Length: 328
Ligand SMILES: C[S@@+](CC[C@H](N)C(=O)[O-])C[C@H]1O[C@@H](n2cnc3c(N)ncnc32)[C@H](O)[C@@H]1O
Image (tube, rainbow, N blue to C red; front, top):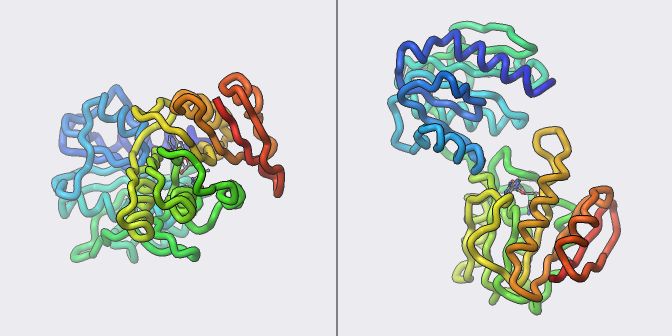
């Protein structure tokens, strides 16, 4: 399934809906937006910081809990079905009773099973169009349907999570390896770059309760999950969790940074993103600061690490991961 197929199907649905002529309030959930045809009143919902910023620049309005006047909605399915159903619920709550919802699902992401389940989720199928290896469902809300708000649940490890955030149902093996190197002697303030639901932050504060902690992620759901987990497990400690894009350094500087950088964007491996995290870490450390990071062994980070830091040490090379300490 190529990403462009989903885009093509989305654009087809967008043109079919004729919303630009009608100028009615429209909501876009995780959709590519055609710059040439923004309706007058555009709302958007995305958990990703960078995407939200670019919507903002185009003049869109962030969807709030109180928005209830939406007449047309476009929702692109994502890989995780539960997260997609959460997005459908979010969209439905913002829509007027007879709104049209265009739900675009690649066939390989289970379009057939959505066709069977949509009535159970509270929708009537008005029409179904096959386009570019996707199915476009035009939906109406079923009368009296209840579109649930709460997306949070506890995973098997006792962390509060929601579907769709990184590794919501597991502890990342690399992160577990990295956490073995946390000690009460790590210099504070400490930053957790790409915190996810907060596993590394939690382990850091467990062993080093007096640390001043800053955690951040570009997925808003992860930021909320991390905040919930730290509130629950470390009440009264000093921490701040921020929504940001780490391709740009945050305003603060730190004495220690811990991280398990991302290396996937969708399915394509994006080594550049991990390298950008390393550069940001180097720029965000105070003098004599320390970076503790873990990465899959095969990822080519050595060169960028060498160019950004004075001293490098591999603390462990095991189970396909390398744990690296870098100092400036
Ligand atoms: C490999 S996961 C690690 C998550 C968590 N630290 C753990 O150990 O379970 C990488 C994290 O980086 C986040 N991320 C991806 N791109 C980002 C960006 N540009 N800025 C900030 N965070 C980003 C992802 O949402 C994800 O939570």
